[in-house]
Image 1 (cartoon, rainbow, N blue to C red):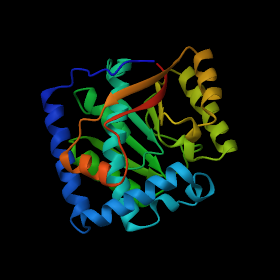
Image 2 (cartoon, rainbow, N blue to C red):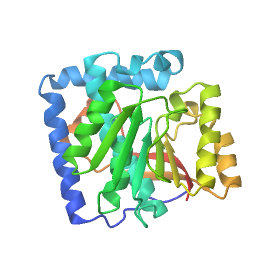
Image 3 (spheres, rainbow, N blue to C red):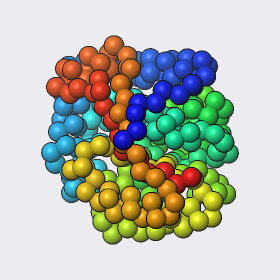
Image 4 (cartoon, rainbow, N blue to C red):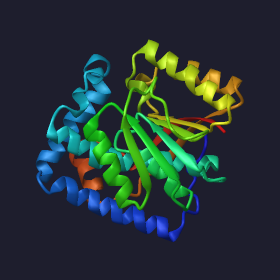
Length: 261
């Protein structure tokens, strides 16, 4: 298991992240009270932990304004830090990718974390089926000073425009059905043979990723590696309060990753 690795991100990058988190809070608390957001986060967390599968495939996770706000504020900040921890620990920011494709990008924070760690802004291409999420991704990239474009598309079949980009797939494969996930893995391995770097990040909880070991075996056979990351989430006072109020505890948290570089 890899230890918590705090890389040397630039001061400018840290300032951009701090300003982004402040703007994110203002954006999602502008039309919703803290108790409303807390209730939405509790419901969303229960959905992810207790009732995965069909309801997630139908998009129930983003089925209300409250859940969308909780996802775009709380989970965006948490997933950003998870991916940033993995990128730092793997040394994936050097050399900096000329382009990053964010498959199943959601609100775009995985590619943003990778780009911020590089110390300079490469091109980002985000692909997702959800139009609301793509709007959030563009807003997040703009606030972080990153250049990106989005497209609606299916994770397993959408084509990207960049030639041999780095690909990040974060917190997305767990929501696919098994046949789609199998097709996606074959496609990613084929891209890696052509020189594409792959980073896949998912939760630590085995219940969320029962398919993980088969993916990890394929990645290892292709010359890649599997890691578990533990880190202290150094977040904002509002996010920390929201975490506690919703009955969660992410002060010490983690993620798992597959890397084929």
